[in-house]
Length: 178
Image (tube, rainbow, N blue to C red; front, side, top):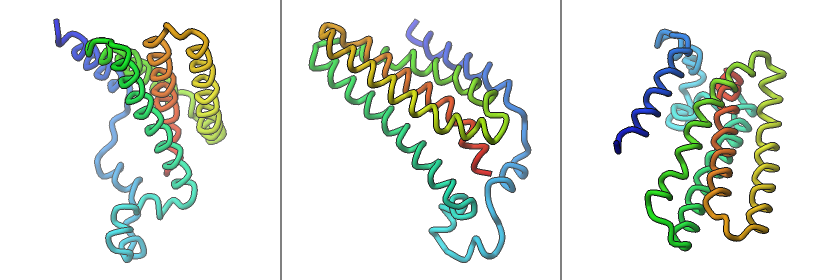
């Protein structure tokens, strides 16, 4: 019974991955990295940051947006656990708060991939989704401020909003890097 959530998530991930087209490793490597002598002259920096250096400023903006979203999700999870611990919730409740967020990210990743079919849609998703996240988090924590007894629900909603945004933004960010 303890492995049931992990088995469900594994099944959902397997089902989601069936929709991903198969690419050869050589095609993926050629599309991500620039192997010209110009790209390898910079040494260690260009070896690890070659994709960002070859794509340009756009890749740095995308990386900064993704880093902010991942940091927001991690910060919300840490703050949520600390708040629940201070309130006296058991560890099982603390761990269960992130389960809906994982399901949301799996669902919204597929949706984000389907929505990012044109360059204008990719840009719109990359701009609009963080704005929706910001307004959603503002509303969630404003509501939590007025209803002091509710601790777990705002944390679950905040984690869900953050991971859903990461899920939607992930596909357009990958396709915009090329």
